[in-house]
Image 1: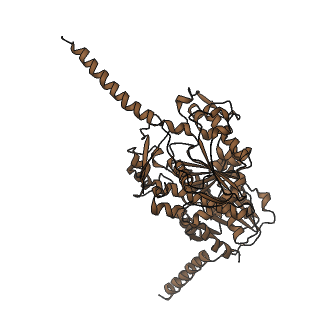
Image 2: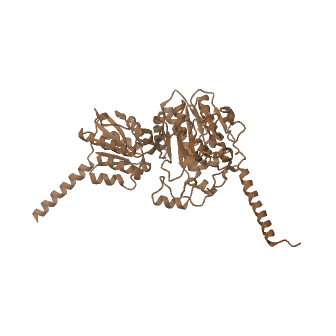
Image 3: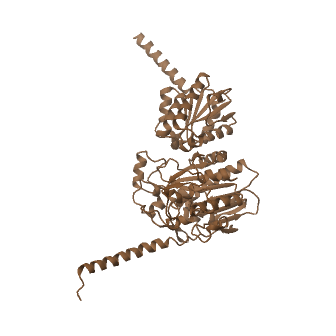
Length: 374
Length: 183
């Protein structure tokens, strides 16, 4: 039987297209598998955000919440990682806490993947890897590298203009899926608004004293290696910046602008008793100047084009051949947390908060992130 | 020949006096008003530093001329922050005007200005340097954290205007010259 050549070509192309779809589909579906975290022996309770907003139950946005109680009265600290799932230092710093912390006074609540839904996809057209692995003494640990915001599959379509609730502030449409523009959220809103609402409820119901949101940003962004706070956290933040400096880490202190709504440091501060902080490290894979976008860029933060930019004076950090490795960024976040706690303790001795298993910057640089993953 | 020698000696003495003037410590007095030039939150840090060395200081991020009443030293903390401007509800232009006005007010009242640039690289660059320059040029004494002077920006102004300058490694190291300036 003679098959016309055009049909043969079409058949081959169909098979190739199906193979490509299969490979891409497997990668796509692989991101639906949750990351495995191994909590320390100090964990006393595990829950989900749906305990604070029932409508999140059963959805991919229902993030896990880890609670570490000492049994000794004191302050409660909330640490959020993964508000933006493409900022791995925040997620991993929170994970290091989950896997190591034992409280001795007060209470720690950690949600390492606050925007859990955003971990199920990557940002289109960015060419970023969906996963990255961290070497540990017990073998490699693989984690997802997600998108900046919630998955479009779960929140579609984006409006042309995002009207922030309840302020009415106008932002670009895709910001409707950005958790850090959605506070205080609402129980019957979009997936992102419900996530924000659950976090607000958690802060209130758990009577959180200090709430910290861990982020990263591109090296060319003015606010990196920075500690941002609400006006009520000004004194604690100033003390923390001085404490960080003693460790050789320079941080810019920034105040939350009251007219920019929806941000954690603004809405948590205005609407709850918690004193909010947001920390930013510098992450080259998020930058517009970056070259090859790979897993190695996540881990080592080495980029020839950023090096060139640094030499031209267009980045805000000291960027050299050593890059901006993940260990340094995670170390900065953990040292930042320690500095905030220390400053809080100095100013509020009546409200103790102490723990073990919170490594600092020097330890992370010396031993790497993997040494603190179980 | 003798005239030339005498001339050279006079010239040398004048130059020596000039250098001496540049290096001469200015003694500042309390109470102190601390204000920002650019609305960075470094003004809070400056307040913490003053507190740590037991100085009678009040930090008012958006201080006006009226706040200079009874004040014997004005500490300016330069550095631009877009978040800070947002927090203060002001624009860059309005902030620049405020800074110029308070510097003028201090000058009229013969209140010496001490400048603390403690934000390092984050408080340098196009947006910050207008504030850095205007503050530095009004200062009797500059205290600068090294990272903010890697290109010699402040050292150059200090040299040109005969302003005493202390360049320190860290923010916490500012405490030593700060305490000494009020002794």
